[in-house]
Amino acid sequence: MRTKFSEDVIPLTDLKVNPGKVINHAKDTHRPVLLTSRGRGVAVIQGIEDYEKIEEERRFIKAIATGLMEIREGKEIELADVKKKLGID
Image (cartoon, rainbow, N blue to C red; front, side):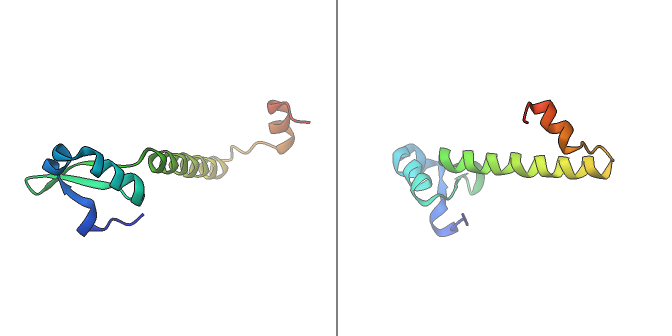
């Protein structure tokens, strides 16, 4: 999902003129669209499926990092205790 600056940087006025085209571009290319106003970035439009995927990946990575920190701090839990807590036999 690499941004193509020649295609994915769009002035805010283009969004006002044809919002469907801009939204479909983000959805179809699976790349975020950077909206600009007076040459400066002001917002990003992204397809919902791509947003949800990135958020899921972010939460997963955060959970891994949290787990690694807990291991370093000596907060391990035995597998048998986890299974018991979750009701898994």
